[in-house]
Amino acid sequence: MKWLGSDKNRFTELMQPHFDALYMAAQRMTRSAADAEDLVQDVCLKAHMHIDELEKVEFQRAWLLKILYHRFIDIQRTRERSPVDMAETGADSNDPDFLGRDGSKPDDLVEREKRLETVFRAMEILGHEASSLLALHDIEGFSLEELRQVTGLPEGTLKSRLHRTRARLGRLLSNQDIHKPVLTVVGGKK
Image (cartoon, rainbow, N blue to C red; front, side, top):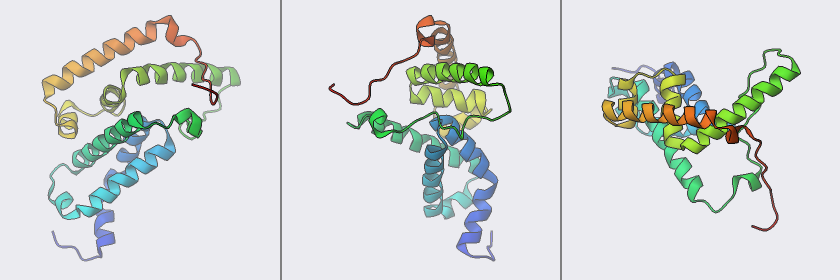
């Protein structure tokens, strides 16, 4: 393919059709608009560094989502090893930009917020890899073939992981303890 424009135009032409899908997937994974933006920016930087390879890839969206998924897992593993407690940094995964504003009554908003908290808590218990896989398939609508390309896992493994994750999520959501509020003490002695 011959490019008439600059590298910037070339990159824009390659990335623009996939940008919304990348951002939505990143937002589902991170549950934070700011973290999603950072994650997509990392993917864009990597794609720009490998623009010649991106041009040759048949399924560009899957290639980009694979980078997104692996980068997300790397970031989560780094955070898990970090001695810095996220509660002490003021970081909040319940970004108000992520929650919809549809004109609901205040009581409905409070109830929706409680349900979201419960689901977020259950997804955290599942772990980052399992919850990301479930979000990509069940929320974003990725096919098993697309997930196979993104994760590099065989289709049978994906099916069994999705089944086990859904079953575990169902058990977690039916457990009454998960519906109780969680008190987090910030600061003080550990």
